[in-house]
Every structure is written in C-alpha cells, then in structure tokens.
Amino acid sequence: MKIIDIIEKKKNSEELSEEEIKYFIDGYTKNDITDYQAAALVMAICINGMTEKEIVYLTKAMAYSGDVLDFKDIADNTVDKHSTGGIGDKITLILSPIIASLGVSIAKMSGRGLGITGGTIDKLQSIPGYRTDITIEEFKNNVKEHGISLIGQSLNLVPADKKLYALRDSIGCTNSIPLIASSIMSKKIAAGAEHIILDVTCGSGAFMRNKKDAIIISKIMKKIGDNSGKDVMCILTNMNEPVGYSIGNSLEVVEAIKALKGEMADDVKEIILTFGAFILKMAGKGEDLIKNKDKIMEVIQNGKAYEKFKELVVAQNGDVSYIENPEKFEKAPIIIPVLSEETGYVSSLNAELIGKASVLLGAGREKKEDDIDKKVGIVLCKKVGDQLSKGDIIAYVHASNETKANETIQMIKSAYKYSKKPVRKTRVILEIL
Image 1: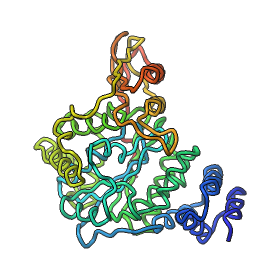
Image 2: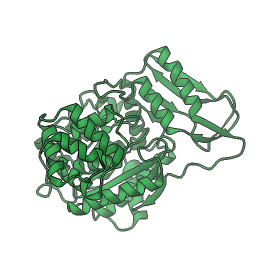
Image 3: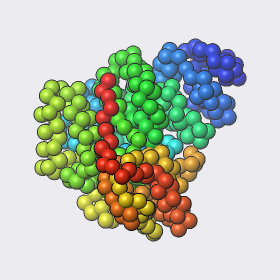
Image 4: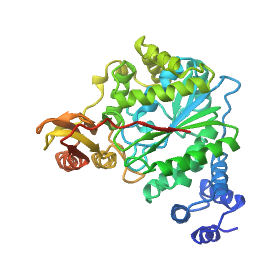
C-alpha cells in the first residue's frame, strides 16, 4: 500500500477502505507520511468529501491512534460538552464548573483556536500557570477528586488528530464536514466520557454557514456516537453574531468569571441554561428541564459554580489570584473605542468579520506556528437589537500596536449594519437533535 495511491484514489472521488484510512493515519502519526503528502490527501477530502463509512473509519482510526480513557471505575455518568467553534465562545469555561458543582463529572479534552474561531485551551492558558498538558493519571485523578478537568490534547491522546488539526488550519481546510466531524468525535471517544453534548454552531462565524449543513454534521456525529457506544446529543446554535461581548483569550476568561458570578449576557445565559438542563437530564440528575435550569441558577447565585472554577484552576496549577481579581490580567497597551456612524438599531453583526479582526490583532492564528497574544481582542458594547445614536461606543479594540488597531476598527465598523426600525434580538437556540 502506498500513500500516493490513496491520494490518487480520493482525488478521483473514490471511496477509501478502512485499511487505507488506517494506513494513512498510522503513517502520518508516526511521521512515515510527510506533511505535504498529508496535505494533498486532506485537500482532496476537503474538495471531494467522504462517505458516511469513510468518516466512521477515519474517526475510529484517529481515536485509537493513541490511548483511550475509561472513567467507569472512578466516576459515574461523565459528561463532555464540545462546540464546533465560533467567535467569542467561552461557554465551556462557564458551563463546566456549573455542571461539576451539581455533581456531574466533567472530563473534557479541548483544542486550540482554528481559523477565525477561538480555542478553549488558548483561553485557559491565559490564566498564568494553568496546565493543559497534565498526565493522563492527573486528568483522571482530577475528575475523581474535583469532578472536573479541562485539558488539551496532551501526551498520547488522539495524536493523529493533533497533527491533522494543525495541518488543516495552515492549508485552508477548516470547513470540511467530514474532517470536523471526525476530529471532534475522535477526541470525544478517546477522552472517555459516557455522555457527549455537542454545540453545533451555524452562521457567518461558524464552519457550518447554514442550518442544513449543521443538521448534516449533527446526524453524522450522532451516528459515530451510536457506533462507539456513546450517548450523543446535538444542539444547533446561532453564530451569525459573536457569543457574549468579549472576543480574545484573557478577555473571554474575564467575561466567564463575571458570568459565574451572575453577570451574564442574555445569549450566554440562554445557551448555558439550555445545555446545562439537558446535561443534567442525560446524567440522570433530573428529568424536568425547568427545574434543572433552576438548579443551575441556584449554584450561580450561591457561589458554588464560581468556587468550582477556582478549584479547577488550583488543581491544574493555575494562579487563582487572577480569578479572584481579574484586574490582574495583563492589559493590551492600546485600548481604543469604536464609534457608531449611524443612529438607529443594530440589525446585524457579522461574526466572521469580528473573528477576522481578532486574528489580525493576534488573538488567533494565521499559521499553525503563530503565537497567541493573550491580552488582545475586542469587547463589544452593542449587539443585534440594541438601540444607539451616532457617536455611541459600539466596541473597544484591545491592540498591541496602532497599525493593527486602526485596521481592526474599520473591520468592526464594516461588521455592523443598522436599521431605522426596531430589530428583534438574535435567536440563539435553533434546533435540538
């Protein structure tokens, strides 16, 4: 078997066998297949797609390219929540400690930013000292002792996906449904949680631009879950405008801390309550969704969720003083307000443009080798449905230099569209599958 023959086969839109896919994954993981050969095959997949069988084979090969965890001996009903990516998506940082404080174990392996979408690991690493590369033993022990652990793709968990994930980002293959589905589900299978709830985003700031594609990938991921003995649920959310108000790594951590203390944007609150209520139901902690939402609000109001977040940070060597006093996070040297040029109501806010602006500032990566500037980003002041007058502040740019700040200001202004008539707030939850 030769990689060139496999590339040629997929270039001609032919179906790859399970053995051929496993050969590619094994070879690339062991560095027997080069980056340029892998890039050729990935590009062919991106252009020509994959059959359902091929996606299942690819997911299985990646999931078992390294260690596969099992938490049944240390925790009941472990849950993993994952998002397909978006702009300003800090939901995991808020939801995970909430659920853990309600007695449901959270064992989650997250990724870095990909394209214009932010990564949970980059956000967590903006907390000084926080370790996302803990050992598998530490990961399992944290779940056992604290009911929560959030890590990166460390050590020998899904090494194939770790390489492919970075490669996809660098060659413009981030929006392929087969590659997204297999990447997500391989991590979920390897991470060992019994229940998986997926936030499938769709809109201008997501990999799935429309609801139709979001439904397609949801059904594929649910089928992969069924084949792997996992309880999988998908909820479609709107990513035509950013989630919450902050875009950028430390800025999003600060917003998450505020949310855990009860200061939560309306769209963030709706996502947290919806996902949280279903997670509690999946884990056998309550069948009544309304009562489950009440439980969530209770642990926010009594401080248990915030304390659980602090517990997580301490357990993974983070400096908890930054959580207790968010003012300690390093600030960008340049913070400039962006002013509205019109009077009326915000009719749309293009999440893709905001995401591109954040990457330009350094909050995301243009190449896989790029470093993240954890302190830069954008803080929105106005979102869809908000009323404003000419000259009102619509956002703040947090930048490392004036040139990037000025370029970003123009992009942000272009992202906003206005109406003279009142506009409804964006619908957040689109469908539950």
